[in-house]
Length: 386
Image 1 (cartoon, rainbow, N blue to C red):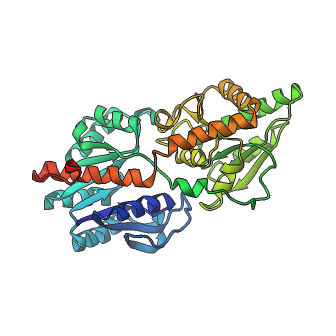
Image 2 (tube, rainbow, N blue to C red):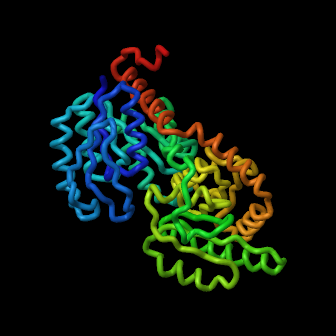
C-alpha cells in the first residue's frame, strides 16, 4: 500500500470527488493535508467525510489570514510524522509547497506536482519562465497536468515527456446530471443564457453583457423575443458588472448571486446555453459542469479546456473573447435552434464529458505514481503488468 501525502489549500467539492475516487482504487493510503478550512476568494461548500484521511492544519482560519512561514512550519511537522512514499503539492508557488517537495526529495521518495497552467493564459517575463522550468525539473519526479495545452506548455518549459501525465480536469458528473426540481425562483421560465463565474476582470463578463445587449436589441428589432441572461457569482467587479447590466435596454439580466455546489445543477439544467467568455482561464471547470448537465456551451478559445472538451458545432461553439460580434452571432445561432436540436447538442456534450470523470482521473494519477516509482526504483509497476 502506497502512502500518498497530498497538500491542498482547502478541500472543495472538486477535490473531494477526486480524492474519494483515488481512495476507492484501493492501491494507496491517502492523507490530505488541508491548509485552511476556508478560502476567502472561493467560498466553497464545505464537504466532510470520504474514504481518505483529512488533516486540517488551521480549522478556524481562512487561507488569506495565514503567514506562510507558520504554515510551512506546521505542515513540515505533519509531513515528517507521516513520512509518505509520495508527496503531492498542488502547484509550486507557495513556500510550504517548495519545502515539502525538497524534503521529499531528500528522503529519496516520490515528489509530484499538479499543473493547470497553459501558455496562452497570460504573458510572462522570461526570467519567470526560466525559474519555473528550473523548479519543475529539479523538484519533481513527475507532473500531473490537466490537458493538452498544459502538457504542451510543460514540454516547452523543458520537462521531459516521460515525467508528464495528462490526468484531466474533472468534476463529479453525476452531481450535475441528476435531474433537479425547480427551487430557485429567480431563474427565468423557458431557455436562457447562463454564465457562472467569479466577478473579476479575467472572466470578461463586461464583454458578455455588451454582447448580450446587442443580441437582445437585434432580436427585438426582428420581432424575436431574446432569451434572458443569468449571471451567477460574486467578486470584486460586482458593482461594475451590475451597473453595466442596468444599461441593457432590451432583454433581461438576472443576478442570482453566488450559488453553492448543490444549487448549480438546477441552473445548468434549466439553461438553454452556457457561456464562458474568459480572456484568461487555465481550464474552466464550469464547462465540465454544464456539459455534464446536458447543456450546449459557448466557450472562449482562451480557456484551457477548449481543445480537449469542445467539438465546435457538436456540443457548442468556440469563440474569440475579443470578438464581441462573433459571440453575438453564436448567441443568435443558439437561439434559432429548435429545442430538439439543443437537446441533441447537449447529449453529445454528455458523451464527450463521460471520459472526464474522477474515476478516470484517479487511474491516470495512479499510473503516474507507478511510472515514477518504476523509474526511481527499477521495480516493475502494477500498471505495467496490466
